[in-house]
Amino acid sequence: MPWMKKMSILAGTVTELKDFFRSLDANGDGRLNHAKLKNAFEKLGSMAPALRALQALLHTDENGDGCISEHELDKLLEFAVKHGYVLILSKKQS
Image 1 (spheres, rainbow, N blue to C red):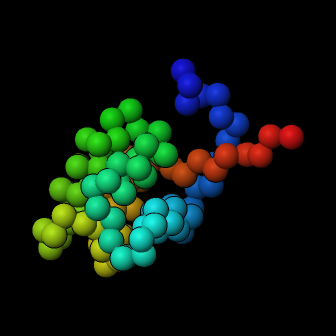
Image 2: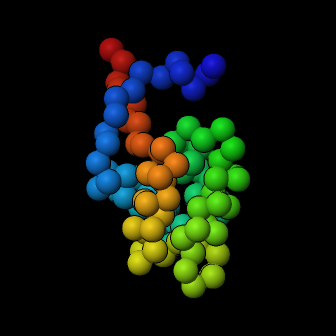
C-alpha cells in the first residue's frame, strides 16, 4: 500500500488541522472549493477524496455558495475530526 510507505508523526491539534486547511487556499481567496477540499482529503489519506470533499461541502457549506469560507471552517473541522481525519506531518528522512 503506497500511502503506508511514508514516515510520519501525528500532529493532532485542531489548530494544526485548521492551519492545514487554510494552507490549501493557494490563491488566497479565503474559500475552499471542491477541488481544494479534494486535495485536502487526498493529503489526509482519504480513499475517496472527491466523495469526501462533496460530503464535507454538503455538511459545512451553510450559505450554499459551493465553498467553505472562513466562518464555516470550524464546521469543516468538526466534520473532519468526526470522520477520523487527523493531520499527518511527514518526518524528514536522513
